[in-house]
Image (cartoon, rainbow, N blue to C red; front, side, top):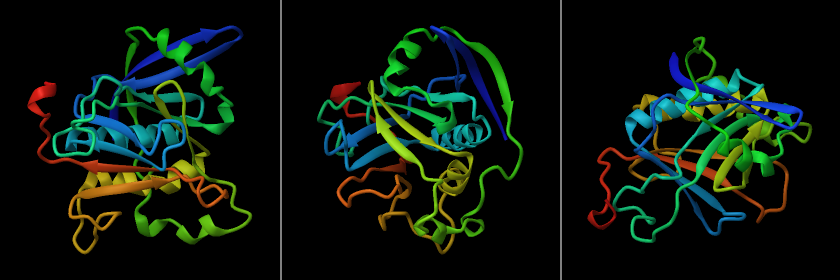
Length: 229
C-alpha cells in the first residue's frame, strides 16, 4: 500500500514536530460532533470511497509512524446531503492521529497547524499486513483489567485527536481495513444500519457517561444541498 503525502517539520521552541498529510485534499470527507463540541457522545465522519481508501492508508501510516502526527484536513468540508448536518451549518473538524509516546500537548496544535506550508512531497510505502483482519484481533482483550493499549479521543482547536499506542492503532485498524474493502458477504454495518460503516471507540476505563466514539460512514452518492454549494 502507498500513500502520497506532504511532509512538514514545524519547530516550536525546543521541539520539532513532523506532520504528514495526504498529498491531495479530501473534498468528500467531513467530520462532525454530535452532542456538543467539548465532549460529544459521538463523532460522525462521512467519506466517499476514495476518501475511505485514504483513511485506511493514513491509519496504517500512523500505526507505523510513532514519531509523526498524521493530519487529515477537513475543516472546510461540507456535509453530504441527507445527513443530520446538511442544513445546520455545522463546521467540520480536522482529524489527527498520533502516538501517546510523543506526549504532544494538544493545546499546541493550532500553532503547529498555522505553520504548515506546502510540505515536501513523499510517497509512504506501507508494508502489507500492518492492519489486521477482524478475525486476527483479540477483541476480548479490551475488557481485561490489565489492558493498557486503549485509544483516546480528544477535541481541541476544531480538531479530533485519536491518540494511542502502536498496539491500539493496530488492533482498531481492522475497522479501517473493512471500511476500505467495502461490505463483505455475511457481515453487517457496525450500527445495524443498511449503509456501510464502522465505529472506532474510546475504550478506556471511565465513567459510563464519559464516552466518545468515531462512527465512519461511506456515502456512495455524495451530493451537497444546493443551498450550500
